[in-house]
Amino acid sequence: MLEPGIDRHEWESEWEVLEPLLEDAPAETLPELDDLVARMLVARGYDVDDPIARAGEEREVVAEFLAAHEVADALRRVEDVDPGDVADAVNAYRELYEFLLDDPAAAP
Image (cartoon, rainbow, N blue to C red; front, side, top):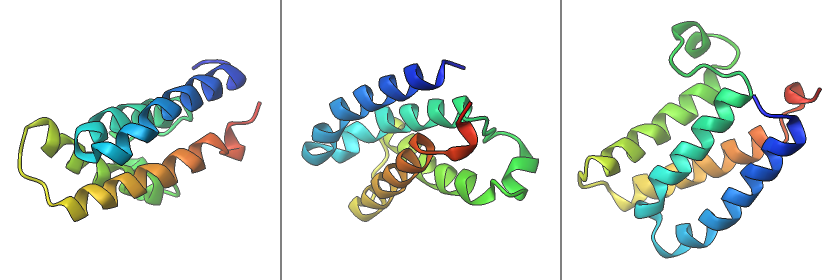
């Protein structure tokens, strides 16, 4: 885990690069956004592979990530994905990004 100020700065910098790409090519950018949010989840202590986390208080955060992650994985496999599903995944990642960036539980 990085220091709180350093990881936040890196995440914001990476998001600033991805944001315009999302506007122009959301399907092509979604896997990179997935990677960023996955790293943020890990740094904030979420374990998306843990069945207990999927059933506990973190259930909504993990479930939202996993739903968007499925779309990103389908795009990585070069499968046809409905544009509405891509838009839903982008919106989910945006919400998760904002939540994780300002996660009060992550404060030192």
